[in-house]
Length: 170
Image 1 (tube, rainbow, N blue to C red):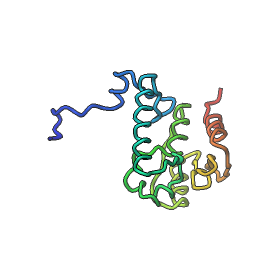
Image 2 (image 1 turned 90 degrees about the vertical axis):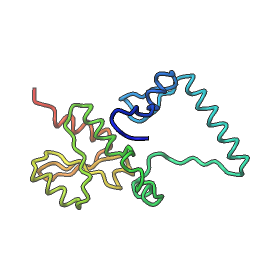
Image 3 (image 1 turned 180 degrees about the vertical axis):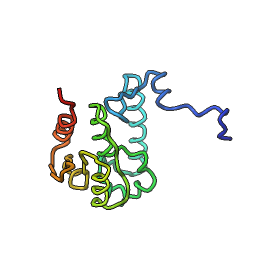
């Protein structure tokens, strides 16, 4: 099958779910499924069939968190193949801040943190939000102001602080 511009694209599961009244997505929770009754019944039927098959084959079911540190995804091998499609903590915080009307850029450059801080200072970035392993583990953010002051705040407090600091004067 060719990938030319005039060939029909395969159906998109998001469009199918919506047109069949199975589920929908909302901007309030990017990537999260909002199941409709018919869709959830279908989901449960498929899940139950898969469970019965796994038990019949001698497998045990486990449940793991969906949000893990990057190092865990690297160790499992998932990061190499899927990291571009993963919704990270930095994406979630950026989404909240953009929703509050702030201009946000996520710097995923492999440079050291020190070099990125120098670059942000040179570019006159008023606030740098640092999300390292410590911050991700505690759902917090270190806010570095242009003058060099650092604040470690919870995710919600960090968003509130930045929105208040960036609000234009009345």
